[in-house]
Image (tube, rainbow, N blue to C red; front, side, top):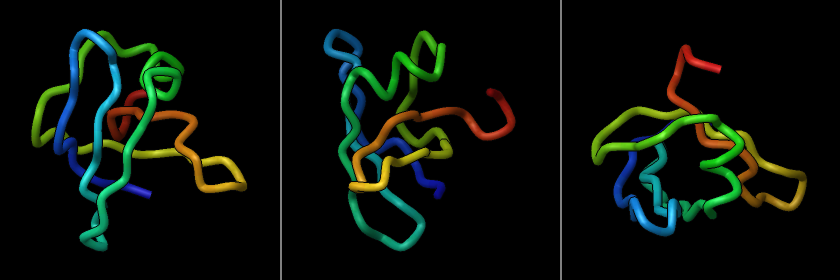
Length: 65
């Protein structure tokens, strides 16, 4: 699943994404840390991995693992 960063708190490392279907999806700091990234910027395109229950487990920049 892919979307765009709508909000990102650089202190808590959590935020929200606007998915391609128009829905909003929150992600926790653990999903950000799983990506190995140091920062996300508003408007940045990302790919999202989710668990079976729909919770976000990883947020990563498309094309970067």
